[in-house]
Image (cartoon, rainbow, N blue to C red; front, side, top):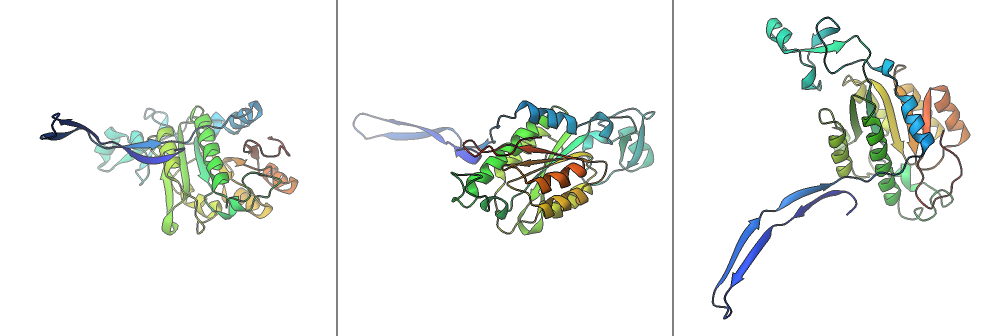
Length: 279
């Protein structure tokens, strides 16, 4: 089992006499749910450098604390982490207020995972030789591993990491608002590939409304020029971007992302052709 949820147990002890006249079953361990989170793919030194370069302390907008002297207060909004609530001022004003620091703080990161089947099943044999005829499922599993790898790398450099993806019925799935990396990995254990999923560009505007700042990492199987242009337009100018793909993007896509200030990471499946390079 590579990722997901499963039940372990229950464990029952059976005692019976040699003649088979008496048999007692006694449960000693109840069934428990075990969550298997994705593993990590090795990121090359240049990839790690790109991740570090995409995160800058001066990009941070919202801190985790601070005193009244170095912070501004604003009314609480749904989705704000409870750790930012200024309890003394909230009690004085009669409603919840949160700190919004003006000092530079480590930024927050959004990891947007593309869950559209078409983004993975369209990969050609030259790109993913052993995966091209599997409907994109195995390629998507590798993308989940890439997302987990990027999340682990960014969690060491940011104050908060949030995972977003398109959920059923057009809803946006968020993971990591409070628990950070652990919640993100659990969210990646549950994510599924869908044929009716919305593109990442339609999900990101909903994320920006949750007061997340700093940077955006998009993980997908492949990126077209149209998708790259939409992503650059959808993210705010203050947000730095990372495009993590399974196959190297063509020069046109790279040019669009470069001009938009995005960095490109290519984390190919083992055994895939090595055309292209991480930048």
